[in-house]
Amino acid sequence: MRRIAVIGTGSRAEMFIRAVTDDHADTAELVALADVNQSRMDVHNGWLKRPVPTYQAADLARMLDEQRVDELIVTSVDSTHAGHIVTALEAGCDVITEKPMTVDAPSCERILDAVERTGRRVQVAFNYRFNPVHEVVRTLLAGGEIGEIGSVHFEWMLDVRHGADYFRRWHRDKANSGGLLVHKSGHHFDLVNWWLGAAPFEVFASGRLFFYGDRGRGRGLDDERFTLDLTADPRLEALYEEPSAEDGYRRDQDVFAPGVTIEDDLAVLVRYDTGATMTYHLTAYAPWEGYRLMVNGSKGRLELEVVESDHVSPAASGMVKHGASPESGSVRLTIRPYWTPPYAVELQPVEREGHGGADKRMTGVLLGGQTDPMNRSATARDGTLALLTGLAANQSLRDAAPVRVDDLLKKE
Image: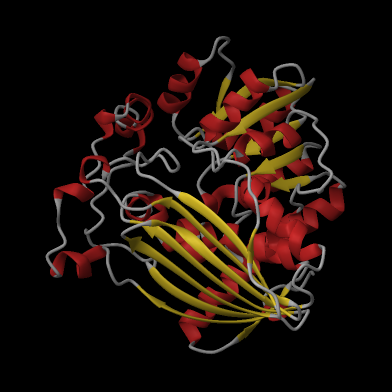
């Protein structure tokens, strides 16, 4: 039985807490919670069959010692990850952290130094690696189905229900989240690194805040369909409505209010150490949700289209739980070889909850001791490579010039 503690008790912590206390109670035990907000920890304890001790985030080291913690799960605000990870490593604990591992290069170096110094383990929760469709893509590419990979085009659409939610929360401040290129696109950059077995070498980016913030209100986009009613979801109401009186944090900020410092429309060009290139685009205000992947190789082309929701229903526009949309979706994976007709790759039915079933598959490996023949658990190095793509892209946005990834980090 591994003794598990969680720091950061917002809504994302629910998945991990449920995995520990319900799904994998035979291999893991939740022994403590930590946060800056006592009310929020009390809410989680109210949902648990057996409440656990709670600690202020500033008392993390004391909690790890008193509760004899084996592994810390970090689900706090992104900018706080590094401090919590290093504290846990130095206390002799392993760490599972939500992505991104951190939000800047110096913090990344702190984590890598601590891993090397302590010999402890950091695993980054890149759940998209555990999506069955992504597993098939990895198997096909690694097996040489389209030969040597020359280039990738990757387009990701966040619909106006999901995309807007990043502009209500703490993510809207780049100092907290690193912006969408770090917080959200880190998933996608990690997938490409994993699919290609490659590391980013050089990055160029262009982007802007186009739809949300003051600019959107100026275009007349101020609309009640962008207003989040926390009372419509009892669990979100419990976690954020009353607890806001303690720390002033608002989960339901106006997406068209001033103060947004992140972009919502982003284009990135990446060159990898294998010689392959990627063109990537993220749109955070699309009318539908999903992504298109096209990989060009020496023997043909792989094309993947995933439609998670084909539109946003006005009645559901305030919903924020990703993957719980009532609209229809579809998945299509096609191989286009040279000289022969294209063919569709047969796929298993896609689950609608938990990122296509990826959350349960991931926590089964990270917390349940399940074996993984594909060895998908992401290390601190994997977290670093995904992070550095986003950080290099952010620097390129500022400097309007290509950025060599090696220039960002002293320790590879």
